[in-house]
Image (cartoon, rainbow, N blue to C red; front, side, top):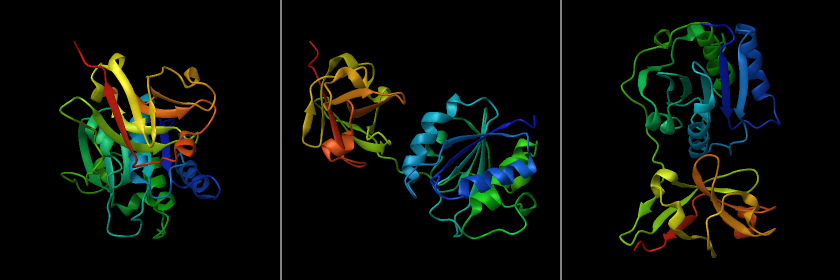
Length: 267
């Protein structure tokens, strides 16, 4: 395996502390040639659902063979397992808390192992910073050619995350909810193009909070300044945004709030 293997980091650590930099230092000590990409460190603290969404909407843009470290880990130091999942194109390291739910739904899994072989950890493992002491060194060793099977015993499955799923009523109205709010205040929902099923042109209205948006837009600039718009964003999910502002603040909405999509009657 090439020493310049890509390692992608996704955490809820933020950038105000030294956590992310220390993880990178551990990787550099083991494999200085690894190419480390910061996928995201701004996930809300302990927001496993947000981490699952971002990982699921981003991983496919990475080169084949990339190794992902996904550390949104409220159970660090507890009984939860650390797992390594190998698919046909990628390797994922994560706590067994459901953060890989979107990956399991999209990728064929070849191998799942519990990461328990301390040979690939740092010598002293803290009970509160497995990102540094376990995830980072294990990823670095994987990038040097260590096979996932060397990390521990095989597992039959993983803990699943009960992600909210949209529903369609008898009269065709789709009801979903906000699953992620980005730093611009855009409200991203669990309604994607697969749910709509190619009927975007028949969308009559999108309702969220106390507002109804009477058309589907193609860009954030379609609305007047300060006006909310509904569109399918880069993730393929329906989102509500505000031209030049924050939908979250304007509509006083956040994750978990409901969204309904109504359609023109077909003739």
